[in-house]
Image (cartoon, rainbow, N blue to C red; front, side, top):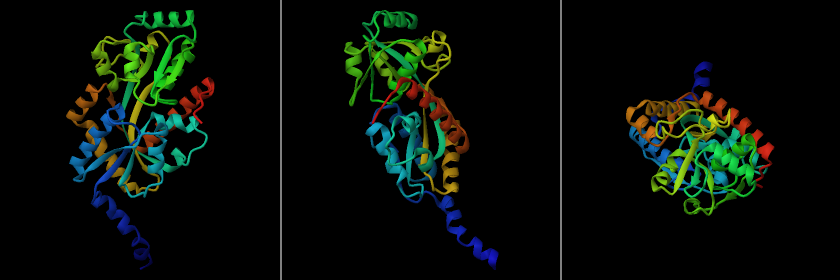
Length: 313
């Protein structure tokens, strides 16, 4: 009887994953529509909707360097119906911001990684350098005269560029934008950025920007003619990455169910092809492995932020 009584409170919790989801699920994305994060999140949401029989609805909540979205999910009910699109920005923000109303590692449970996405070092078409060595020579000959744009302090574009400056020993001027910087880069108002591949392909097709390198350690199938930065700056490696998280106390069986379905999607040929077309590589694994990866990324970017003295607040 005692054993039965002890087991009774577990029954509703055990049944939760069996029935989950019974209503639509919000997937909160801290970036605007049309960005790399948004495009990939919608692909995964569509997959989960088809697999689990309820709508997974992408809700864009940009602002404060994705902190608005993260805070919303960190304080949401831990029932699996409010999820967070987790990115490298969350790892960066852990040391970039000193005053937050949440602690990412404490308040968000990693569910599953989805994709790793390299960036492209883009220059405006009129910029004289055609290669990374030429760019470095140009930057060293005229330090502080080249403008590097990004969608904000602490964004992937920003910290990837800071890592490049640190490792190549050059000085660029960071120009953070609140809105789109595309037009200014194409017109030559600013000269360089380090932009994730999915959001760069259309820019490259315009002919108004030029790719000098990818930020991954190897060439990418979607841009086979573009060399990795590491060929010219040994050891350089920076990739964006996306995944899904949930409020920390979300039941483990719900987290496991979501993780299994996401991994099934990453093994699906159609999903793999879509991710490859976006310039990314599927990134399957357990929630535990994703948690360790996030911890390692948090440490890596904390070192860059400390070295370059980046401040957001």
